[in-house]
Length: 487
Figure 1 (cartoon, rainbow, N blue to C red):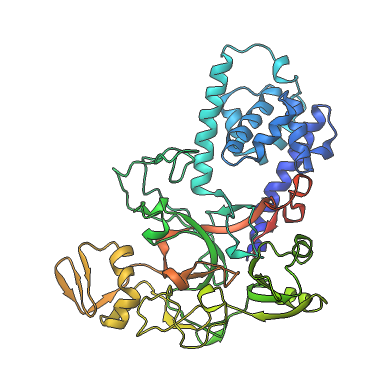
Figure 2: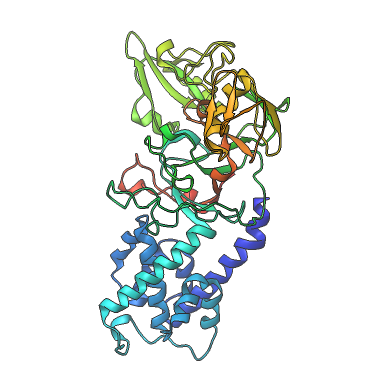
């Protein structure tokens, strides 16, 4: 389905933009091909408008790059004599159409860099203020309704998504949410940048609605969502739209019956197709601790040394292909499956063995672990359950915290809502089950439960930049991941 969106929607927009960009570069006396070379096109753009080349650094800094990008798009319009407010709106929000328009218009000429332009009535400070205000307004609209930039901070989705990936998350796939917290500083989430100060006031809380989207959430979609439990939000009861963002793969849809048997995910009694580069924990037993060179050779970003003598034992997270490659090495004695639990020497879980952190938190009813889990039924809007101990252990928090009910009291075998004892309950919204592709190194629905529909932010769409946090300066950029679709 994503390929359809790319070819029918994104590709024509990008092609039109770069055609216009190419023509404007040529009008400014630069080779047109420079417009389509990543990074270099920004350097050339800065040269055309007369900004310092080192502003490219600003364009690589999240948040800052939003302001600078909009500012230099406006600068480009000015350098072609387009100084009206509506020119700047067109040149930023609709550049894919406006740049080809002025690029092919014979009477639009390049008139020089910013310091060569005829003097304007506005002071430099006023120019900057106008540009910043416009950039904030435009970026806020785009961020709320169309696309939002995210970074991958943890390895829970390795190898599908890498730490240091910068990606765009589509709001238009599932439909954007209307704001719940209107009193918020633009382009912030929970805190004001570089401080611990809240970026919002919760004096006004609006009911959220979801605008129409192109598609529903489908099984195996990579989804960004607001993590529901309070304890995973710094213990702060944030409004729904300001809870911490997580990104995982949706493996269970509303109404699905999900279970895991010996690490294999089974949905509605059918094994679910596994992600291509799914990882699990393994113990590598070798003559000596694996060096950084070996880790880089086998593309292993992290390692935990369990033992150094008489032989080295290392806990690593590997794909099936990596396991086979490591077993061929002469210095490796054994590669065997493991768990992520240090209290049991990382030995694999057995069926019926309890993982203390697992959801639901009732060891008598649910002696489950990350490898042997379920079955559990995912709540679906309109479906009704009977109130008993098992259902309250599974869905009690859902009813109390995410269904927008008032005065909920959940006991072991009873449920009271607003003073009335309830014997059956009908769910008000859909829920989803999320898991990371790095199955033994992911804090996901197996540990904290279901994701409500009103917590869904958007769909992971494509990677626009990727920086390797462990690489040196000259190998920092992962060029092969540029504009890679997220599958």
